[in-house]
Image (cartoon, rainbow, N blue to C red; front, side, top):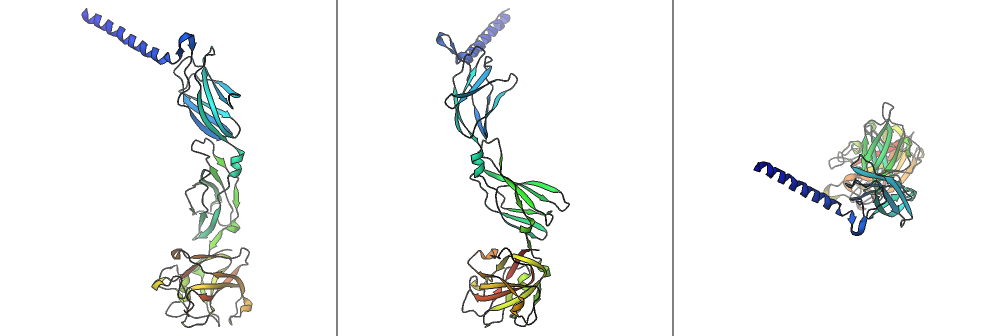
Length: 385
């Protein structure tokens, strides 16, 4: 009997405490003198979008909340919507013109009683921002060992670039679409079909809360702009009557053997007067676009000794054995500058050169004016067929 009385008293006590807690939960909605406030929106998250703003917050525990109204432009504009009955969160997408906004949000019950307003800030972006965005540029596109290699200019991280949507044709003739992150500065594609155009556009998120991805228009990168690294296995020495010969076991063919370090390259005979010129056959006619040349660096010879300082490149399709310059066309004059020696020095040709099979490098001066020989470690040639 005593045990039964104890359980009854304990149950009454628990109910009283629970009711007290429930009363406390609703005290914030009740004000003396009969004014009733419903629960206000809490923990409101605001997300930016393209000509729209998204609001998300936890569904109120107050069962009397039935509608919500969002105000902006100093309460001159507003929108009202009914709260869902079977959801844990409230979510609303508001379409507004581009700009920064201060919003006030109120909850209402069925009798028109309101909550205390909650103020939040948000942003909608639009055409003005879109006009500021530009497509990331391809710095170089070249084919080497049948792989397409792309070198990208810096990504526009300031405006929120996240990467590129990139499209190409594979060797089976299928169009492929891939995503390239903004952090990627070099891209290698092994299944690219030679002679087909590329297309891409850049994607942006305006800020960390963006719900919409902005996209530039597609850029078409013509296959005619894709450089091909000439196959050096097809290169051959050509010795015309007035060409400079070799010395110290350093042969002309060593400048396309793939080695850029000290060991072997081309070395002209010593005490030769300049200019010094050598000739080689690339095996296939091509329009040269770029050349990369590596200097000799042993014995502190970088930017010194017999490394070429000023030189010209000539092209021909029908050279004569006597070496007459009448059969040659000058393609460009170059001046060597200081650079990262390990990467070689890049020289860019005029963009509209005809295609040639035979090339001549004519060295006019070397870095050390007191040096009477010429040394070249390695060259790479890039062009279009």
